[in-house]
Length: 412
Image 1: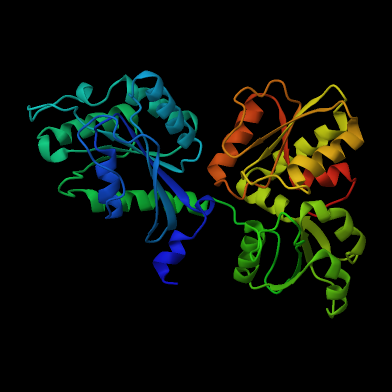
Image 2: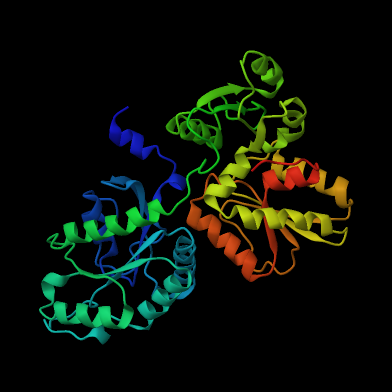
């Protein structure tokens, strides 16, 4: 497999997300094609050509794997247009870096334009949303080859927005390299501020045992994503990795000269692993590690305490990132609800959502229990945590919830 194939197979959840926003016909699709050097998006003078978000995975030097997304125009019209705008708004929740594209609307013949001709109430509204969500933004004036007053307009935009403003031509590629360098600077800073999967957990030379049940939910012939990511992170941290299934845990321990520093297991196997682990070994789960790197571990810890205050009249939401077909042993749809009802009572009301479906109104819930979020990028997971906080609803994750329900002490 060549390098480009490796980048194409990097999960989108592990990529930095760059999203292009703007009105119809400002050249978002043309700009995406110019940035990627490929004909990714269809370009047409007809307004509304881009309907569903168009995605392109690629690598940027100094940053690594990224995901570009081209969205429908946020000035789209009609019932279908509102649905397209809704999908663009969903992209906001996943965006690490926004590219807000502006340009004079066709047809225009004057070479001198004013700020008001490209900076409308639409752009102002969306920039306000980006600021509210704390998403860094680069404003791009496209079609600069047609505008002699572009430098004056760019300076005016910098003054009114306090954002970087770049002048480019998707047609001639003028300014594309400069824009790409500006993007890389922002993305490097974002990447440096993101916690790694095992940050602060292991040290070089640690022996770590991964207890990985290969049950009905495990894909045939493959490991699930959190397991793969944990193995790679441990190897990067120069640890010794020992892998086994739950039924082979005691036998695997017997082959070690000393107890492993850490045992990482699937959350649903906490009870079994806790009974078998050496006293000196620390225990955690893949779900908790994912929760720490994707979300806010302290918020999840506090949220788990809310389990102690649930009653039979409480309402709980269980949210999972993936949209797999539920199995008989499903942890989110079967095992956690069973543990909750055994602890709280059969009348406890439990709702379940999956994938990008997530209620906007959380006020009816007392607790949200979320999966580790291996299918989401960090920005998307944090958007859900922030929504829960704004709604004054406790949120935790699978691993911490199961540990609380089973009264198991954890080391991370």
